[in-house]
Length: 609
Image 1 (cartoon, rainbow, N blue to C red):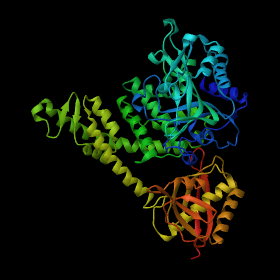
Image 2 (image 1 turned 180 degrees about the horizontal axis):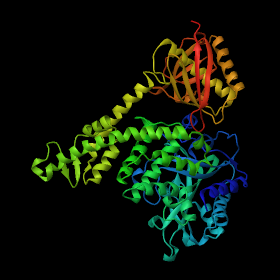
Image 3 (image 1 turned 180 degrees about the vertical axis):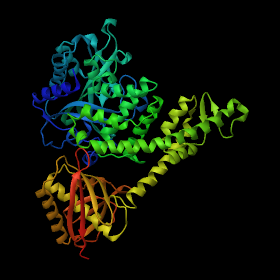
Image 4 (image 1 turned 90 degrees about the vertical axis):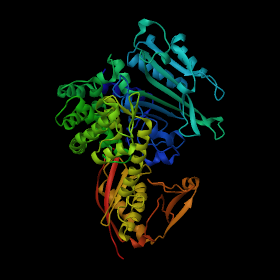
């Protein structure tokens, strides 16, 4: 079964069970997730992540039964990319019950889909359930359902919280037991424990039952709204369905792998897989509006691209290749993710610019590392070894600032510098990398301050005109929510003396009438001469008044909220105009796409004062 057929089968199966199909959210989490009280994360890491507010009780506009295929990104296991099952970007097939159906339906439907629709062998299915502890009892309900479905008793295992418990997201909140499904790749060997035979079993599906609310004192109470959250990794189930030895031998990877192998002068399976994985992740990140930079998401993107280029050099790929490879990735996924086709030229353009930039500096960075290496080995004479360099068990200790200097000068990320040195037989020690990371953190903080200006909210100048435009973004933000809906949240902004640029979450192109209505609302609020007020309040107080905003400016235990009468309440640190009538006439110049699910507005004001 190919990936396209799997996606359609999955969505159709749950649609027939009363689920509404919802689109994949962006890889860049929206403010609504943070405002639900979750910890800030850089990327969408799981199918449930964009649904956190609804799992916490907010009504979902599509109802209580949902299904989708969510694109996700995780870099926690980046060092494992290239084995049979690990990758950074992946697709998660998920279905949810928001206080609707419960264990009987969720487990039965999972089993039905695997056996009757994907045609897996029921005798090769193993499952695990929560064994219980002092916080919650043994999940006897799930255990009995599996028995009732015909799963062999010796194929059902009881694990603790480490393996069969989800959540909460923070220290408190919704959580509960889960039941996991595994597929036996080598049934001829007889029964075995999936937890002790990782290479033999593939975890293919996980059903989470959110039935508890963890309290501040560590105790657990029953939730009023019990939710079901399930997830099945597309790449892993594809490997099973296509009888592939790894996820990299499935139809979502093979076209890219074929090109890489054809370009390689010296083939390495691991390097080939890293190139394919990292470029796939980069293509999707760029399509969601992320661009290479030296801070936060942009730095992760840059690291992925540069690590791919680094491994391409190990494969002896001498020509520029990111353009051709990205075209293949876009073709592979374009039918299901049309935004890749829509942004094809900008995606390829970003990759080509980054490729050209990095290739010019890679050689310089490697030469600088070679100098450290030569100093360390002292020309193979230990007595010639440079002072300040220590080697023990093939681990080298140098000043971490020296490694950061290579990054600052040549653009060679410390992680890649570590990889190169390890390839040569000497790895930097933990203290060296810690010093380097501290220098990197200071550098990124400076870069972040520089790019955002002295104030939050995207200001790059500090003039009165910029402050007025900044105030206009608050009115624009609320007006967009009034016209388009409460799903609209700011995802970024950039303000100069001449104009403002405002990015927000919304899938469709705005109509002319919608643009005119937004302009009308903003200009009406300007005419009303509403004074602005800044208030410091607790997070709880801010949530109660519905304060919104991308930057949650904090002052100790308080948050900074700017109020425009009773019309707008937004997290912000300033600066702003004293009153809306200082702004003048507001005019939207342009509205366009800025990535999947992200729109961008350019606007200006003609000041009366």
